[in-house]
Amino acid sequence: MNNNPSRRDFLKVSAGSALASLGPPATGLAAAAPAPAPASGRIKKAVQIYMLPKDLSYADRFKLAGDVGFEGVEAQTMEDPKVADEIKKASEDAKVPIHSVMNMAHWANPLSSSDPAVVQKSLDGMKTSLHNAKLWGAETVLLVPGVVNADISYQDAWTRSQKNIRTLIPLAEELKIVICIEEVWNKFLLSPLEMVKYVDEFKSPWIRQYFDVGNVVIYGYPQDWIRTLGKRFRKVHLKDFKVLSHGFSPFQTEFVNLGDGDIDWAAVRKAFADVGYTGWATTELEAGDEAYLRDVAKRVDKLVLGL
Image (cartoon, rainbow, N blue to C red; front, side):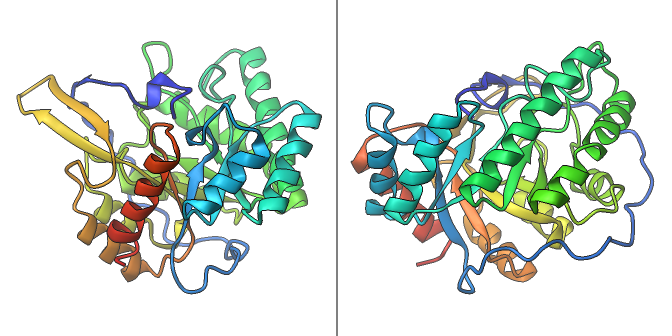
């Protein structure tokens, strides 16, 4: 999140493009996705690896994550094999598993590009992420499927990204890693109905969704997304979002700490319960020290777990 300004740091946001009609969502799903790791009948809390102090070794970062109350970590694409092995050992020694990998190649090299060289860089990054996930024992890899901009139409983003993602399915199946499509501020997949249709069209249990609670607040309600997506989302990102000043357009907004924004966490918690979600929920906030991280973990306990 912090590595990609496109995902946050938007202080002025214009709301308004109308969605093209894409027809009703697909009604049937392929075979059920591979079962996630047992979550003891409840949501498990994790932290983004970048939120842990960078001045610490990986061993100390993972130990700190466990000490402050997190049960797992979401890591990022690592091309250096030695560092990847170091991260694996740190996770195993601290007994804090890596449950997912955030792919890092999709913003600079979107799969919706018309340039084959750009697409190839993106696919190579995803292949590295999938192999990272296998090494680390993760279940999923997060993927931003594409972007819409002045040069890439909505339809082209849809068609190109699906075509390119399909080439990754055989590797995902071989490695037994699920690719999870995230909704982000990319001007694409702006409603839960669209996301359902987009995911269902793959007809593959190896393509699911990664739901970000905070990313949809500008144009929807997370509790509505959760119920509409149902069993399609396999992982969750946690952050909060606040509208600072209302106006027709633009208006002032910012991402804030959990509980400091406009999200109705009681409604979100109920929606998770209604769809039976018991997977991982990962905080995606600013980095900080031990006291800050301990406070974030307690906020997850209160707002998401209802403890």
